[in-house]
Length: 198
Image 1 (cartoon, rainbow, N blue to C red):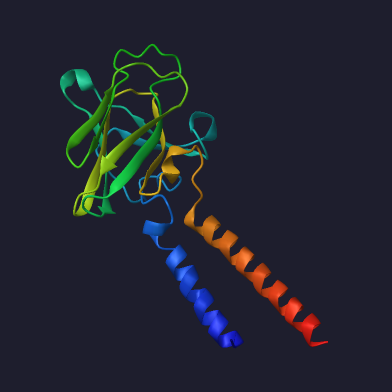
Image 2 (cartoon, one colour):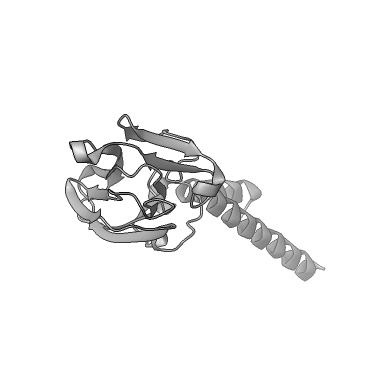
């Protein structure tokens, strides 16, 4: 096999690995490191960027609406899913730092169906994980919250259960790892071939 054929095969594999459906998390900007990018949010949904209050990194969301008046802050993202396929939804939530808020709630919904209405205090971040089924085309993931001083972070949806662990590798990290292993394999193969020719 020529070096050109190897490069073409390697480029094709790299392209497949970088596709969102194969990379794990299909949520864009799930850690909110880029603020509101890829999300649709209502007034009162604050995108913050300071590390002590985030679960990981610096970005997180804080809801500052008044649910007693029937007004929730709302945060949405449409996700490309396959109809009937199983997915895992995961996120980390901290209702508030002190556990004293009157309304610590967060309502989580998938394609219009409520997954959970979190009404108890979570002092410190806790992970919430759900099993869901994909709809045809775009499926709406929605968070509705009120607790000012709360934190929502590290939102993940995957079809390969990679979201149920605490750390999901970014597509670029996975691609870099695969590239390194492939290049190492190619260099070992060339050394073995040269030593056999001598």
